[in-house]
Length: 590
Image (tube, rainbow, N blue to C red):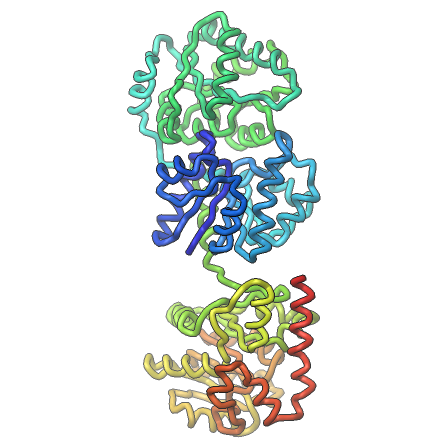
């Protein structure tokens, strides 16, 4: 499997690099053979650090080539879906999403922080129909529900960074020592700054923060250590604030790896942070954190952890000092909730795996498994061993067209345990839609292979369908352990169900024609208690010798429909569905 990852990677931001490391580690744990490529501002650095393929994030031609080869596009973590700092950045990520959708790749957004977004229509259009979106906070979830985004699946989890391992507190003093920082006061307080959003009276904010740091040094016996999460932006802001201070402070100039920064924070007494990930790291390390909120995401996170914050847009120097004083005096009062966040972060990966394994092709909102016959049989055997119940259906163009108006039938197809493509028309449709089924699986072929498994493993079979005597003739031809049969023209469901339940089969083959057979099987699936129920259409007639199947060469050429038209001319009206179906697919595609 080939995966293409994108985010704010390769730009020296510790938070985003922590997201990337956590994401790659989780993918490799579950999918060691996966080929991973990353879009990065520093491709050679990203390749070296993470041992992945890497492409420059603005090399659009190479990105499109890599997308075409990939199975899924994953936009992993961070506050990417916003235009408060830059519209260009939002447009870039929306372009990637749109390109992946156009190439019919799976599109997955994990642990996202959504908003603020002014261009809501663009966001709504881009996210419509993506395979999975997980968001890291309630505000992001509300943003997407408010704009009526329509991904296939939407869930709230938490930031992917919470999957980082625990810090090594003993490394904190070593890293600080290498930076020439020794504890001289009773409190060691980390301060993380970042450039405020433009046009927000930045000089006054810098001065207020500088005064706060001086106050903590003079009145709270504290030593200030500035933490640089993003070189050089954070260092520029930090230098300005330090120049405004009356007292000296410390700063770690070396660009730390995410794990090193987590180790440093674990040895501090508190963190005062603008950077969201400085507060996330402090929560992971169980160190009290106070938020300097320049963005709703900071306030939202602090609410979740039970920690304090102040809105930088609506504060003055005295208010800032008062709130931080209260925080310093009450340090440790917050709940952190790290286990809750860690568990929620793991849900990102569980849902990612679920989405990647859901290898389906959608035709008019009918999701059909893209499996070959061997994969279908393996999945069927897992069902039989589980002793749970599951339905197998084999949609063809006629069923798909019917499902456009028949919502119940569409629901049955989408919720079947196995739904495989039966009909050359679906092969053509997938090609038009930019996808490709591994192969066509005729319902009768899958049924006969399942019967072979039943013979080998002594599973019991029940046949339900066909005219009087057809099921019995089919049972003789199969030469398997058929424990019961019932003709398909019975109007007495109670008798049929009673006969099946008394026989206790492992496999039930239902042949009554579509959509009658699918609706009957789905409605009685749980009541019957049969592990594997398969809808087989006219297969019992073929097995019983009542209907002759097309020659092998015609089947391989995808001309079985022509054989049926020749041998059963009365079916010509039903055959008109195929060209109508193909025309509808072309119209939907273009």
